[in-house]
Length: 375
Image: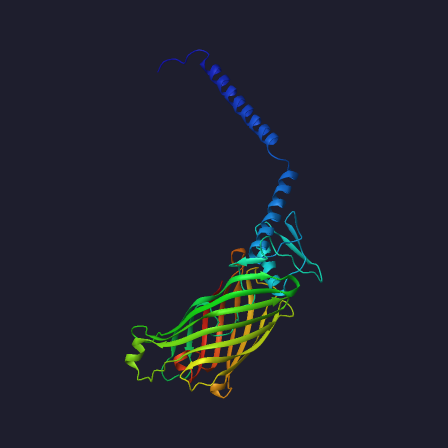
């Protein structure tokens, strides 16, 4: 090996020192520029507060059709002032706002005795979110998207059943008439089907088709709905081939009316009745009655799971006014993305005459677990 170059060690050390100095100078310059260009902490906080207030305002106007009088945010604390809000809407508003990222606390202030002004363009709305007449939680034939497993008790033909439905109650046109309340024209449409899980080919047993217009009115905690609808019922081919069943060409048009009252966020009661206009077979008696009660927890578990309970009782003249009982209990999933929707996981119990059209004269009993979605 050759001898080291004289002075090389000294020059290398000097070079290393200059590199360290240059790097340090660069970091100091970058940090100084960042400090000069970045907004002060107060400005950043104001920007975040403005974002939360704007986001909350958008949720209120878009999902609930109400223009807030004032929305303020400060360090994650959100304060919303509304001229008025229906109790059933407030039960959904608070979890929707609390679920916004960055909101730590919420205060909702509602002025007493004033009517809520509509959001921009909300005097007459086309395809508004939600419905004025809330979906009936425990009604087996309320239009919805659902899938459930049913376990029949003591039935001679069915034991394990899959029940599905495809449809919804859709608001088409809504008008805000101020002190006179809000009016809505909608459409109810759904298909309800049951399948025999125990059959080799998962046989379709029965399908019911429901469609018709509905007119609703709502003011405060009081709402009403008048509906004219057609329903027809059809047996599945596989079920007909394996069973000796006297098929009934069940088809009718009916007019029904329901009135609902929600005195507070937790309680809802409703009652009404219906009348068959045209029916086949023509021997069917025409009258029906319905009543029910629903309980909704004011608080949601972990901010997203709200316990719910519904009891629905229906009776028909055709069955000597014997009551049919439906009970559903479970949780409703909530988030800002579901603000105008209802996604529920429910345990069911039903005892009474079958809601499945072709079997309307049979008494059944079952337990069920399912998922239900209302848009």
